Image (cartoon, rainbow, N blue to C red; front, side, top):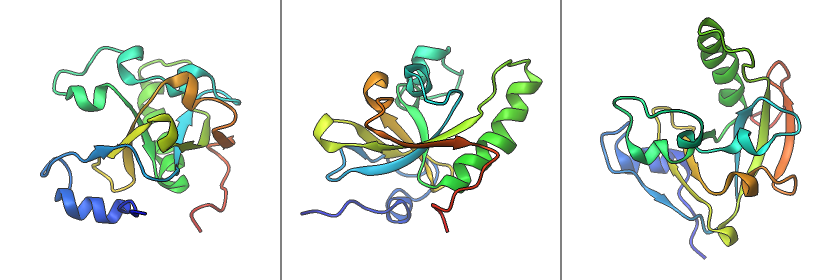
Length: 153
């Protein structure tokens, strides 16, 4: 069985943020990711691809626009939601900023694709049907962004 590359190995393979090629594929084994969400339990919209939720940013590539962001670590997902995205959303008048982190699995059997999109090593793109990825059988844990779990320790 082939072992999928770690995020650090992919970082090295691609040469860092947007300097090398994107490597996207269906994993050979289940992988665990974290996604910031607005609902507990998460709704299908919490796992919707960016193109289903908003217009494409002027310089955004179609590759990342067709998926959604996820993180390989609990801490960076929580901190990004709480300290980076929520202040931006609140400044724009967004009524419902991200309130929770969902830990979920991507499965090779269902044809889900994933790939590192950076710029952080832990930032990945996920491609798959939202209703499938939001399914309670795939979501392993949901907790407040104000909480700290021990997954990264």
